[in-house]
Length: 317
Image (cartoon, rainbow, N blue to C red; front, side):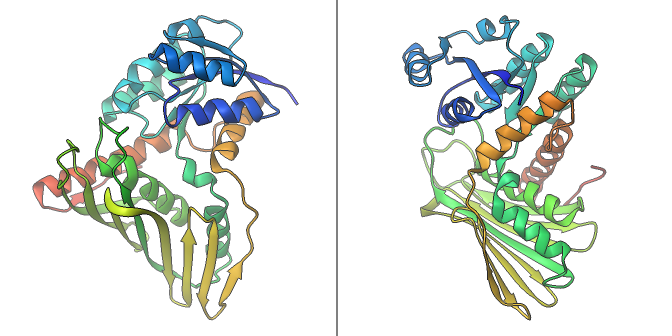
């Protein structure tokens, strides 16, 4: 097994886990991390026995580094990713891919022009419960799928300062529904609002999606609920598949009622391992920049719908 030399740019709440997982993966060699907070950089570097920098350019200038995870705030994704691409590094950028669609499209084009991989960190696709649900749908266990309902709620995370609940939370289930149903969204209608003084953006939203294959998706997200819940129910003509993302459990109700056995796996570990395999084998990442653009396109349309109080048509993929 070849080892890929990697760096992590930004070791806050999510980036520190990238550093941890890379330090544990057999096909990774964690060579450096960076963070604007010198104390944090030194702490994480010491913890995972690697080099720590304040300026991320110090990582990008290391010729031996093949790939980087970009885990900085969303508003900085574009500049950091473009610098990484310019220095010939393969990139996995945390979701959402960028702050705007224009930035995302420029990033994908730059990666293609430079011949480097650009992956988007939609980690829930690597949740074993999602993989099992996709198998069950393919095996026609609940018959033709009619609708899906997701609930992704919890308390407000103080670390989130640059986006609202739609981009931070709803984007997960938008991507998962697209992944499970193999169909793009044709129309979206949303409501959103803000009740928390400490949040500058929307803190609750309800979104209804119409997929091109006729499936209807309902999604509730908020930062108002005092407990964390991450669930998805898929309704078919012959039953229901119920997913708990946190517990990694899947239950089937209906003609084939059953509790489905799943081996627990850390989704981030699966995601980063998959990214490194793509880099090593010269393959496309499982979740590409194009996937990231689509997810951002859908949640951007949802925000427009909520602001205008009108449904929004979504064309193309």
